[in-house]
Length: 112
Length: 112
Image (cartoon, rainbow over all chains, first blue to last red; front, side, top):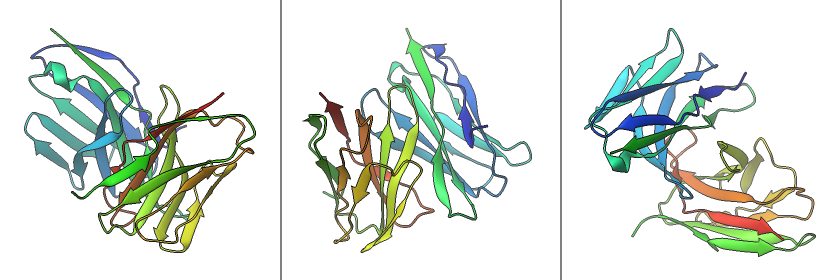
């Protein structure tokens, strides 16, 4: 089982709709989480950090469920420019050394 | 402008050659990282450094080498021992290992 798992998608979303997707993590000691956005053939860019139960930034809301070990990202009023791959990242506490672990990404396609 | 830069943007290598990818940051970050991304895949950690003159292997260090002689610089050498080096290479930096990572624009390496 991967340490951080994401549905690869693609999620095809009508413009203006709401889309939500999850990311599950295996290490219950994970302390902090991040969502990054990556456009095709570009570097990942930070979308938001999630340190407690959740975070909201404009049309984007991240929620953390520690009991079920997942974080979700919800995008409201989707724009064409939201089309990208969204990477989930968990900061994992491990005996071999703490590290950030990336999921494989969820691809979102917003269509007119 | 503060940021992280990588060069070159595109690099072509013949089999059997070593090549060095540059990564420079002026964010005064202590930690720096090298990742590899293959098409449709997530990021995999090659090497990381938490402080000058110190670096640690990541998950896929074989066939790669790094140095950290200056805080601002963390070059990656792809050696001839790396059997499948064609990939997108991303450098990142952060204040410390638990903090948000900021990525450079990446170097796309192709072996001819």
